Image (tube, rainbow, N blue to C red; front, side, top):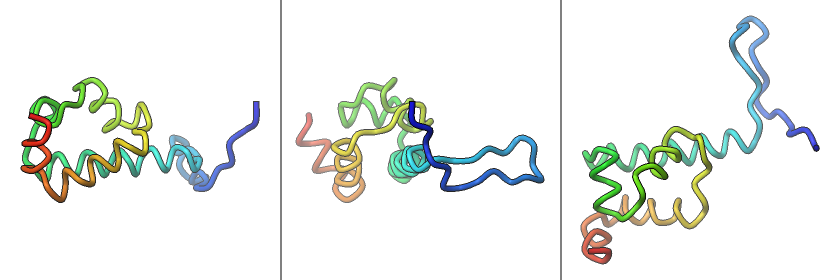
Length: 92
């Protein structure tokens, strides 16, 4: 198995810190985008999931970076951020 390259090394002064790979950084940035979009709309995870037809467990995994949101989901969330009412109406 090929070892992933660390792009953000651990702080040697912090024994609890760890290095971060590109994949982990990307997953974290996607998680932040999704969480910020939802919170900016003032919706709970359950409300967002229901309104935009995303399984709540999937949304939770994406927001907590347990799973990487695929490109189509990131694009969908960006459209939701720009036009939440139009998207909600389209999926209703």
